Image 1 (cartoon, rainbow, N blue to C red):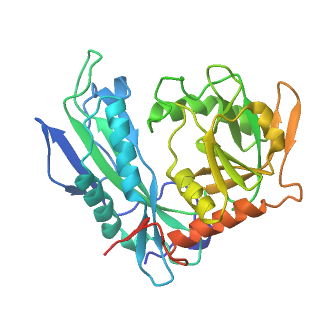
Image 2 (image 1 turned 135 degrees about the horizontal axis):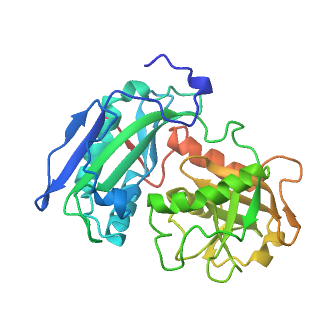
Image 3 (image 1 turned 180 degrees about the horizontal axis):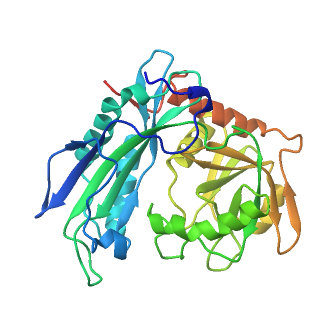
Length: 339
């Protein structure tokens, strides 16, 4: 085990020993390559640099009380990257290669998987980029798929605590029929200016509305939105929303808890009726929302009135984290051990 300050581990990049890489060239994927370099030797006309042929994933490995290392729902990440690749005309990564890459990267850096009990994990970042040189707007003929890992602490320093967010009408994260449902870097670049504006105004993140009519809730910054009311877990349905694997997990756990689940358009005027609201994603799992502020109408939607996360969000959060760390049985087959 590396001698790191596990208790105060930030959610930021820390160098590990190795990463793994594959090259797609001449119509086929090459063999696994192991590298100790943090840098890529890339042609200046690579399509990822000019035409946005780039996709990435984010998942985690956890060390349990039994000292075993677990990877959570990697097959869903493999499928999402496959769908993203097709969506922006890249060569999809075969499931076999995806698995070999992430498990090899974790094994080679297993002493960076944080010890049990600190709430920390090993973040796994698969990356697929157009590697071939093209000047015309066309798909690349060559691709690089790589995986690197880094130990991370909680996404928010304050941990599982409610935050304030603001409704964003001046910017859209993605177009209705664009790349919003794909995990591509351009969507995140498009969110930076609005996120910076939210931070300047004292908010944790932004709540985007649907880009067509501005009548429905879309996403909460880089995470999916959900609301709780009348024993029902409700999350938006939209063609411009990323399919969050954490959100899918929370929907299943909600059903296990005897709740109804609805994935449907969520009108803006439904916000006052929710008992709890939150954002969910791989990085933070669940971020409870204390209040949503609408700068245009001056309306404020309050939740977590005692300053604490709501009871349903709390149960869901602890249930999911307990499965990830192996503290509770994995009844859905989400976890796979690293041998």
